[in-house]
Image 1: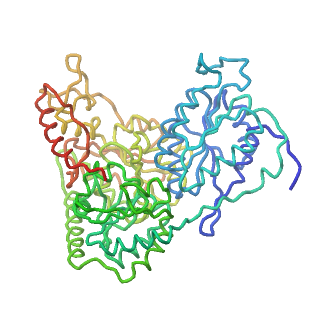
Image 2: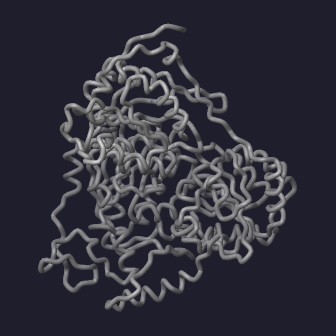
Image 3: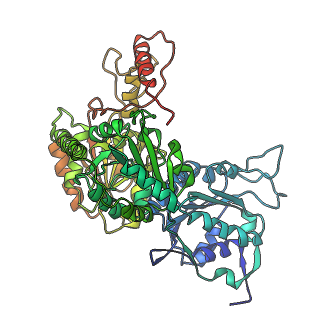
Length: 625
């Protein structure tokens, strides 16, 4: 192909995006599945006109710019980062609304392309509506806020600049190591300017996603380390699932007997009933995983970045001579904790590690301990599932009911509050995509928008969104989008009368749950949970709110009523919200773990002083590695 075609910058952007493909393991698919957007003067005559002209990039209407980025990220996560959505906004508040979503995407290493409108490149009409003026530079707009949370950022001030910017954006978006939010800020005048683009620029391009393999010598050293260990433990992170390595992990575990603890992103790496599956690890981990972690002499981290929740603020691994072997596509993560680094794709590395470990198996004594702890944990989960708290059900019971009643191939979504910790401990995962938690950023408001993204990526699956009242009140509008698009969600709305997670944390710090309940002020002040007298609750009707957004709503006050309501929601053909109040003071216990939240060093409050003493005792257990 040769010659040129005259297009506006925006038309060229959209046309280019429709011709981008990715290929891994012999399978090729289009990379961009559509475009979310909210229109304004910053994009309506440019990107919006191009979307209207070229129907190949399906446009989806949404209600909130932050939510549309969450939806795109959840879609990308469900697709193992091999496909995503574009998000466009107007300038000013529309662009800055995307900041939280962009941060979540980058922290979770999920590809999302942002196309925010920007101020005039030619400047002469400045200040335009919604422009942030800067007296020190005319080359600054609110889109600069997206720089530190974008893996690639560029401002397109001339039509020909996309000839180099768009390929760079694609390189980052399709990279297993560098992916995250990518921002191309588009001045509203530059979007509409025309240019004679080379026709070749719009030919179909396939971006090959590699399975990088580790250094042979490093692989041999890792094999020696594993063979020399007495109590090895695998920590499975999100890279296990993104890399499609779960089957390779199962084979390795069955041949060697090495147990597995899972991070939030890695939960589902092994099926819950697999003998080597110990469940969640760390602050929100199980008694089985955390007890094995405490005495492990070798930790094999696969596809994990070792967040503080995974390492229990670096108190999880207490063996005096513990060593680390890390498998990761990112060199940065592979070298954490002074590890023997295997820089490579999770599946490819495990496949090459298997023959190196031929004949190796953990001792019968260690295998027996693993089985005993696995079985004991399964009984503990069932105990919580079967508990019948009164008068309101506990959150653990609700999780148990959803787990037992939901489709085996379904997906559960959550992100923030007390639900993530309870789910990490209690959810019995049945397949690698069964458990979808956004916990890299733990973004309140992700849940419903994320559920929409999962349903878009897998319309054949039953999708259950678990959301607390705090998160719901932050970002519930995408219920409207699910109704509009006919994408049915089951939304379990758990009402804890306020912020349950932070209320519990506040009480543990000796602060009595101050300011964490949804109540009227008493004598002009918000009080803590432990103040005398019964506070007046706010007259907020969350069920009515959900109805007003177009959802079918079912209400339950007891466990038995919840079971019936959830079964009815499953049978429904439209997005259905099951509203259930839960007891905010009944929590799933912590199991042999701790999280470092510093307590005030001096205080007039007795409870704070006691909490500080306990914090100092636990702080002494933290290790550098």
